[in-house]
Length: 292
Image (cartoon, rainbow, N blue to C red):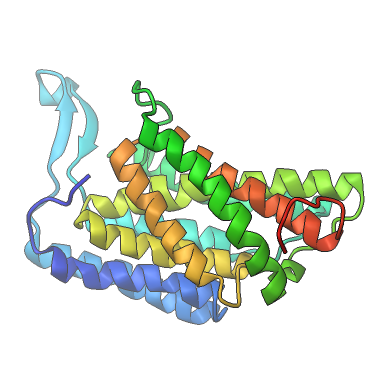
């Protein structure tokens, strides 16, 4: 997933502008600034490619051009940044405050689902370059290191997350869950958003950026988007001290495993601890399994 040789440092400017729209949308919540940054980033990529990059190379299946089938094109920074921009625009139309009523859950489903589905459909059927994929299984068995990391995620989450949520007070950014129905809704919501995080931030944003930049640069850019979303979702106060390493690690793990199944498993284990901490924080004594 390494970027091809080329002037990637110049291309980094429009990509950074697009990714910086995330804190504009989700941290400071200035939509107008987010729109300007997206327009500047995608527009800058278009100008840059028009000056420095030859026409897109088409990949066709078939012996004769007139009867061949277009199966892909060479990567285009403009197209790929536009897909990221579209996804962020769709997410930005709803407030991301955690709510558990039927309307809020429907709103989240439509917006977050659309942010993954619409870029995928455009990539496959409009741009015809199949830039986005969801490699669920790789055919390789998880090794000892991978299983060990799953255990470590649970242990680290058990040690760190209660201290973060309770001492900082950010657990109050999630609604009170004091009935079986609300607890069940919280469990579904936390897990669903966790799966979506990997579909959008890793398999969409990160994968698209890796087509143009070295892995480390692409990982930092996707982490900006990832952490900004988590901030509005409720991981505030000193939360970025936790969410920045988590976002970077998820990108790194995906590079090493190429397995959506594994990064989703890691995330769901992390979120299982988040869910338990939120229930514990709102109902002291209900889950007496934490040190705080």
